[in-house]
Length: 129
Image (cartoon, rainbow, N blue to C red):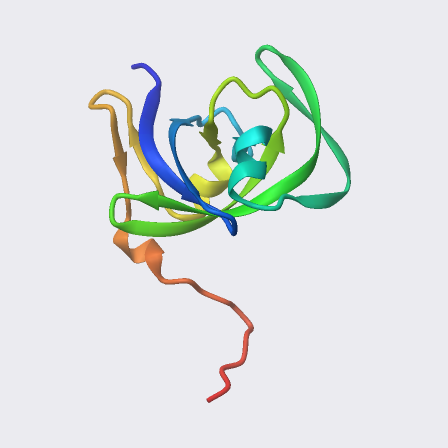
């Protein structure tokens, strides 16, 4: 099958950067290399540090970054954990794939986007004219 990596652009409040992203169905959360997070935005503090387990060891993180991910012609919002010492630029986790209904086709090395997922929904929100 193989890994699916893709060149894409991530956008923060301070700028944008082209990165190589790993689409990882084994990662619960979307992760961004800490140094890249600081270059493109201003990572926010978590209420308390969180411990994450990876194939190469554990790490603690205490910041995250709201960022837009340009995928195809779509600009999709992601909340990414700023991970110290991350080996990849950006790891797209199942949190992002589930929200945006992204499916992976590892045999053809493709990422499949569902156009129905691109409408942002705020359940319970009241519309004000």
